[in-house]
Length: 181
Image (cartoon, rainbow, N blue to C red):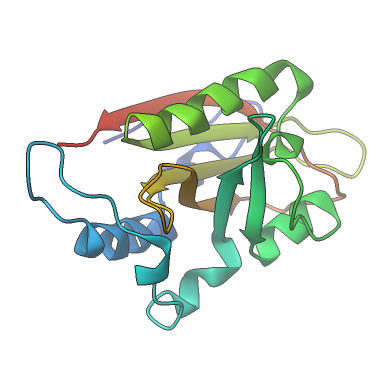
């Protein structure tokens, strides 16, 4: 299945269609999802096994919601440090996006948790001085917190192409949302 247009203008679109980390992370998450009842039960954060996700951890993130309603990184793998040039623990998810996209990524991430639904995003970062154009795939999967609330999400980010000079910010090229149950 091709999710995006053929390559043009040097943008590495073809590489973005491959997402092996997302596929493995989704498999781990699905193994924890309990299909009881009409909607099932979301995996809980304490069910996640870092050993099982070992090779994926550089690309994995965990976000939660602040009282102000922003999604913040609780965990952000090394790919995020390369993209932004610093550790993102505690930083808003929106920092990785162009200012014009920040409200939309907030709505998308919130819908993933509240829906609940899985979200698969195709992202693009334009080139510039020291920054070649790059593409990325982001997966967002809802989790239950320890009290049964829907305030957490697990995800991955896979980058196609050389990151170049940080910070990098993305636009959303495509969003595929799939309700659970």
